[in-house]
Image 1 (cartoon, rainbow, N blue to C red):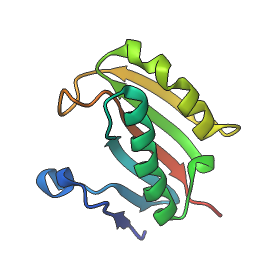
Image 2 (tube, rainbow, N blue to C red):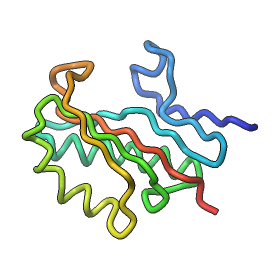
Image 3 (cartoon, rainbow, N blue to C red):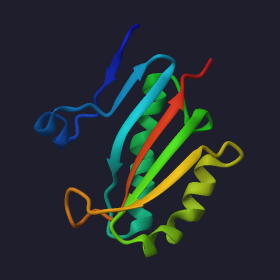
Image 4 (tube, helix red, strand yellow):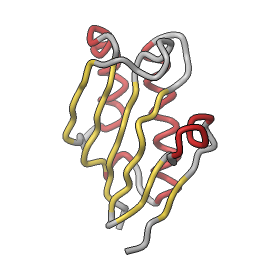
Length: 120
């Protein structure tokens, strides 16, 4: 099986030892991704933009997503992201899980992880 590793150049990739995404076995596994911005909505959209770029480089997109995990320190923030997430996944919603947990830095309000099929 061929494995392709996709790096975004983010500062934590080299420090921690991971890459943004791995393509293997017909799937694209995108690492937990945080975004930039002052609000949960801005961070959500920013994270999705980074994920979209990784999916595109891998040969996929959000319409091929099969699994998404949302991690938020404050579960009350999740509802503010729903319109963004609905617009992103549209008619092709993946299986989803929301977890309330601490993130690597208190400034982060959401982290998103996606698994998608490779586009045929």
